[in-house]
Length: 489
Image (cartoon, rainbow, N blue to C red):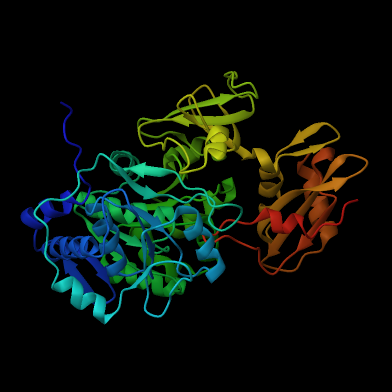
């Protein structure tokens, strides 16, 4: 007989007994300790049961960033149901697309934010009254089941979501503690939406460990974020590269509380070597980069010390992760050779929910293929070269956009760059670059800058200036929208 797999929410009950007065969550002037958190989660799980939620059901969570949101993530887990995150900022049709695909039994929403075609439950005053009078069942579902639908496509293309189990998510928690400096003695300040995979998982990981989560949801100014770090004595912060680049425009005085952080984490997309230097010197010396995916969790980490040796790498494999570089036939390639990245480990999902076609493309023989291209050196350091689908083939030569983007972003006038293929009769594809700027600079100057540092076949045909990039709700640039602006040559 196999050992029982515990439900992740059972850890909150243990904290409620053994550290009842420790603050679990802070949001502005609101605070809740572990004793109250345990009771609240149990009450909500009990009420979900009265609403017809059974183990294995899918429950949508489309809520603003709040203590209630965090409590309900754990309450859905305790009920044995599967969490389906939806961004409450999405348009109605975007929410409906996800609901139609995953078919949740109900969706928890903000007051007056109903989703057409979905069984919505508003988290209003009536909801709270029902929760407080709910019977708390004596037993809850074990953890030998699905827990979280970690959406990897958001609202671009058809929805894709691998279903993570309780145990797979716990393995991700282990990685957070071993690699990222999270743990029971820290105060993690969550400054990204809880819908976002990093914000949600780091917050849940911190509560599982028995530490304190400080909610500082956007929008906020850099000064407001820095002040909240000082006020709450937070020790760990996670931000996506877009937000970090905005902080680099602020004064050292404004950002001074951030220098005291034990750990500043970046994840979501790769930074340039110059970005990393500026972040370490201007924002926080204890900075590390975390290469990860929603499907597989953490892949590699690049510490502040590692950055001094290999400033263009994304680090070495994280705890329990095996990484390989393979060719188009899935054969392992020699060191320092560009190929497809694949990895495996106990935190990696098994496939996409109800999507065998997408699963067969990305999950093979126990390996997950994130769609990224890279190379690995003899010491195990991984170097990203971009997305395989973004690779440009110009006159039969493979060109990796990330190299050109990094070159453009090294120019003092450029904030961010995105490079895409441009359909061409002569070369199959030419190179188009899009940039946002700090200060005015003309196209000829940027073209000349590229010519000084790149091979002739890597020089952009044209460089277009934008006020801002189109982005997903997770902050990633939507390159398909940039490509759609281009008229074939």
